[in-house]
Amino acid sequence: MATDARVLDAYALRPEVTFLQRLRRSTINFIKHKPLGTFGAVIVLVLIAMALVPQIFTTLDPNASALLDRYQGPSAAHWFGTDQQGRDLYTRMVYGTRNSIMIGFGVVAISSTVALILGVVSGYYGGWFDTLIQRVVDVGIALPGLIFIILVVTSLQQIPVNLRIVLAVGSLVALSSSRVIRGAAISAKQNQYVEAARVVGASDFRIIFRHVAPNVFPILIIGASIQVGSAVLVESSLAFLGYGVQPPTASWGRMLNEARERLVQAPHLAIFPGLIIFFTVYSFNMLGDALRDVLDPRMRGSR
Image 1 (cartoon, helix red, strand yellow):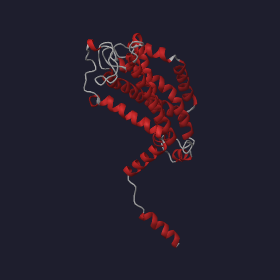
Image 2 (tube, rainbow, N blue to C red):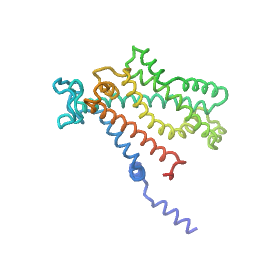
Image 3 (cartoon, rainbow, N blue to C red):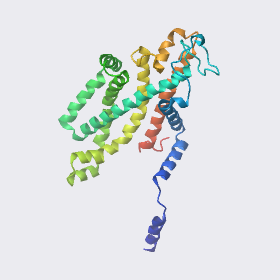
Image 4 (cartoon, rainbow, N blue to C red):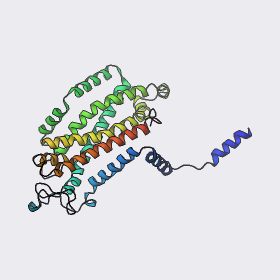
């Protein structure tokens, strides 16, 4: 009894850990054990800052042309050189970040919401409803992705092009992601606390909202962090093909398109936009991989 009392006293005297202290401890552990994920997170934060406040990174106008300075290489005045109209390439890349990041996060917002609803509801109810939803998902996955996206982008002319890209890419990603969410929902609904909630008379909505959905959030977050990079790559591909934002709006993919005819004379026109696309996709993938290791209990301690 005396031992039990000492144990209880020790717990009572233990200082309460605040949310900020837990956040600080988790951040330090993440930096210490996930260096690649930390690198990806830093690059992602820089890209978000570029998209929100590009004036911090450059004071030049992205559309200001100087025909006498065309095709200049990297220098102190123009860090990444100039393009075919004498515009500063670094400045245009900074302002192009807003377009890519906005589309990337827009795609993730739509795909995550739709995938969560379809996957959780389909996995929870099962039966004919699950079969119907999964056949629709099969049809969506079977569609040729790039052709479907180009069809949507070219058809809905009354909608801004960025929103068209977000809707087309987000709907395709949502269908494939819902299959993963469905599997997690099927696993979560078999837990004993879900059965206990059903026995005491909890409604289906309450069980889904309070017990099933929280169990699939880690998977949703991991997939979302990787999907942003994929969406940026798709947007750059569409801009390269001429289906993205139109000139003079800065876009990484359009920069690559415009650099095709001058690859020998001015290779910097393709090198720097290609590098920023590469590091953007790489950073989001590394961050998503690190988040998977941290949030998925099965992966903890595997690296």
